[in-house]
Length: 113
Length: 112
Image (cartoon, rainbow over the protein chains, first blue to last red):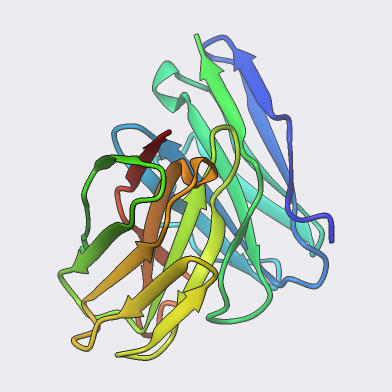
């Protein structure tokens, strides 16, 4: 099993630029989650999907953030325009069914200068 | 909203010692999970607990789901250098699908 795959592993960009983070969940998992991790706030849930449908996006910081899941094997998290305070590690996680544990990818470390 | 208080924040222990950390919640959870995160990687699931009072082991790790459903602890016996990392508890409430609330983490460092 390949696990949850995220790309890129590292992203450095300038303020104002668009950033797109990508995630491939574990095959067969039907729930997908985007988390953000910072020293100050720990792990925060941004949004999660069930069967490709967004269920709860209440954690998305503001309109600059958007997420899509066009099919069961791919999701994107986009930040446009990016700001320095968006610098964090962004994790994608998936789970096989309702109430089952999450499996995390290795994250994308985003630095916005 | 819900809060998960995890303690201690950090621990320095010697190889071979036992470790104990815990999480408490302001509200009831129906699932408790314990994850470990190594540098540059995502959290990895260690133990999942689904019933109040449940005591589960995974090798040298033992975790318990508190009877009040508002707390959980994780014990590591006979620590080894590869136990170094950050340990997170996570709780899931009734009716929130797989949405987890994470604790603030316990950073464990092991000295030889």
